[in-house]
Structure formats: structure tokens, C-alpha cells
Image 1 (cartoon, rainbow, N blue to C red):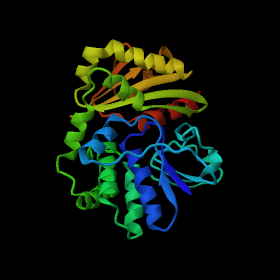
Image 2: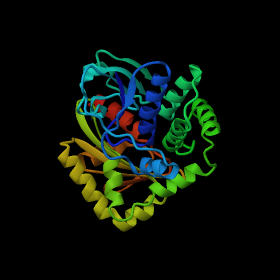
Image 3: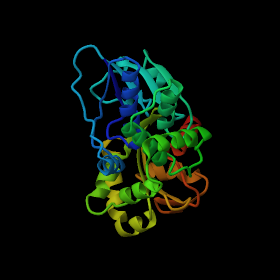
Image 4: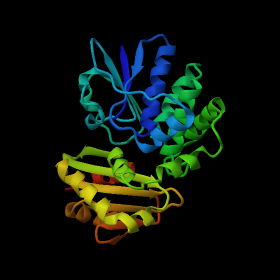
Length: 306
């Protein structure tokens, strides 16, 4: 049995990859099942509800199983019920990986805009058409991860697979806008849920880096109205995880601007030389849209020099 999975509390890219890849493996005659752990991020919950797609949940690992790990390639991204030795395949699109921690795996790591693109290519290359449900999940994953094709890591491969999946799924033309509006509603407890849902801890150059991310409309308004609450949530996360550094990256889906909020003084000092930022205490503003992957790569470069 092959279990296809992703990091706990997945976004739409990770969720769609785990679900669709299990479908592809079954179509190829293999025994495979998707397993999803943790609370789904808001965009995943919205898409499943909007299109009446059943939710995939966790499993209790029993017997001889192997793991296909999607949209992540580090130990922090492996669900805690599995061991690194069980992972036999990794499909990811990040520059920073821990492939060496998985001794039995084969890997495909390519710097495209979404891991969903890589899974969609697997379908097309093998002549298997995904179900409408898997097609709309993968299409949504590409739209979400590329911010509707506006971030700098978008490739022609992302666009080609999105067009193919849109045709299969018959997704509405305004899917990206509707999805972004839905996940920008952070009223009440949805703010804490969104921050917790897109929180990750990485080990970079031996240092623990706690990260959070919001991709929403009007982050400046959210900061103005709820900055103290956001700072408290971020600070608590950094301390609870015993992180050396921590930050929240907030991307404005309406334009190319971003905000970065530092979770402690060490992070603010580290980010002093981060180009293109204008700082107000621990809050930075950029006229360019920043990507968490880019920030983490920059941190890796900075820490490697110390």
C-alpha cells in the first residue's frame, strides 16, 4: 500500500497533490490511498464546499506501507505518524530541501510555480485523464500557489497544465477571484485559524525558523485593525516552537506589495539587510510581492555566511 500525503494542515497545492496522485497510482494498477492530517487551510475548505468534493482525512498506519510525500521535502513536513525510512517518493517544487533525510526515496524537485503542476504533468505524460474532482483540485492548487499567475516563479508549464485542467474540470472563469475573496475573510477567529494553518518551522543552517504566511486582499487594512493580535499570535508561535527566528509574510493579492512582520528582535536584526524593504519597527513593507520560498532562500544565504 502506498500512502500519498503532504504536510499537516495543508494548503490547496499540498492537498490537491496528495489526493490526485493517489488517483493516478490507482489508475496505473497500484494500491494507493491519500491521507491528510491536520486542519485544512481556509482555501481548501472553501473549494471542497463550493464544488461538493468529499474531504479526505487521516488514516491509522497499519501493516506494510510506503509513503509518497508531496509538496514538501523536509522532515518538518512529514506527518508525525510516519518515519523517514518509509518515504519512497518525493514530489516538490522548493529550492530548500532535506532529501538527504529520506534514505529510500526517489525525488522530483523542480522549481515550477506549484507542485500541482508536476502531478498534472504525470497524468498527461501517462495518458491518464484525472477525474473532474482531481482536475479542479489541481487547477485550484496552481491558481492559489501562483496567485493566479502573478508571482515570479510562474512557468509556461504551470500555465499549460492549468489550461488543460480547466478544460477537464470546466471550472468557472472567476474561480481565482472567488477563492481569494473567500480566504481573505479573516473575521473573528478565522484570523488565528488562517495563521495557524499556514505556519511552518524549517531548519535552515542549523537554526529553527518559524514562518507564517497570509495571501489575502487588503493586508494593510488587516494590519491597521488587528496588528496587536497578529503580533501576539506570531510571537507565541515563535516561542512555542523554540525558534531562533520567526516571521509572518503577508502578500497582497490585489497588487505587487507585501508586508513582513518579525517575530522577535533577532529576526529584525537579521532582516536589516533584506533589500527592498521599508521598516517601521518590526514591520516591513515592500513594493514587490515577496515569496516565503524566496525569503527562506535569502535566510539560508545569510546564515551560511556567519
